[in-house]
Length: 258
Image (cartoon, rainbow, N blue to C red; front, side, top):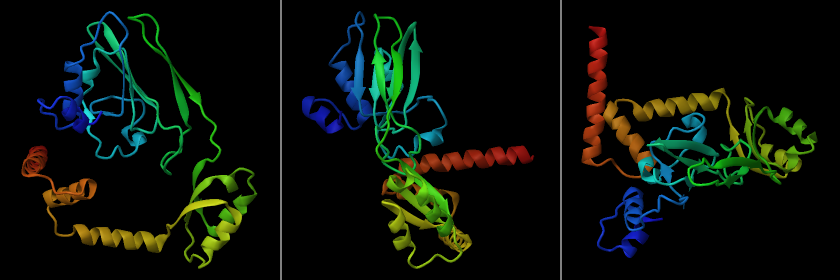
């Protein structure tokens, strides 16, 4: 459900984002509270409390988020975008709604080390909670990150499964062999990424980061981060908000020191 599609269907409505798009569609498609209502959409729930820590989700990017309050009249909501299976429940006035991210069925990045599955959802009579079962999947190729010295990693080629996995190899040698790539390709079938993580590299990265932020104020650092994440500068209203946040923090710090 994209805002542009909803604007085409309802040209008289002001729809600028996913929140307004979903709200508009639901307003024009009233639900029957006597039957089971299911919603399937590729959206991110903005204020959800999910299983696990926030770090487990990975970066949700700049996807448009919607408030979970819009789901309150549904019995089951199937969402997309987050690659790790997640579920949570919202309750209101004796009614509950199960919201579920089934997660991706394949590993699309090296941050996805968890197992993959599909969701089996069984809906009982109206008023009963849906039954959710995760069915594990066996992937033809796993995705793994291996860290260590080149010599030690090459010895891992004797593992019966590892040579066919998709690999990110991080070398920690102080001096990396110029033909490291060729040596690794001779042992492993799918080396997708090679990186170096040794004392010299860490020192150089730390110096570059310090130099790039040196002399910047808190708000300038935020502006830099915002632009890196969204590809544009924050607008004046957003800058005002972050200035107020920093000022509030400074006031609390001064109060704690008094």
